[in-house]
Length: 64
Image (tube, rainbow, N blue to C red; front, side):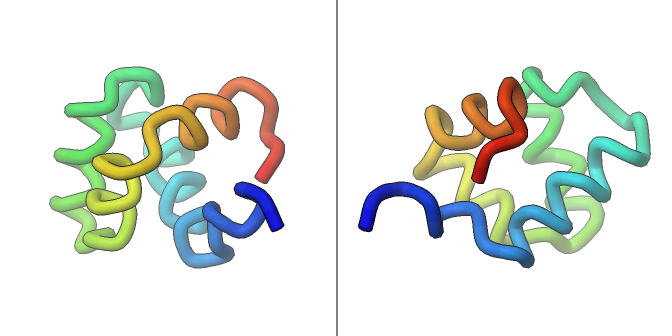
């Protein structure tokens, strides 16, 4: 198994919620983390600290 399971359904929903809110540019990781924290998405805050490359690939391609 590779990285295909890193973006869980919960992380996916949190990313989409922030994207749909329009609160910030999704490539501005500090702002994404700030919004995630404000929204109570603590799993996403941790995920972004540990998996920046996978997050960027998801934002660019939509592939999980």
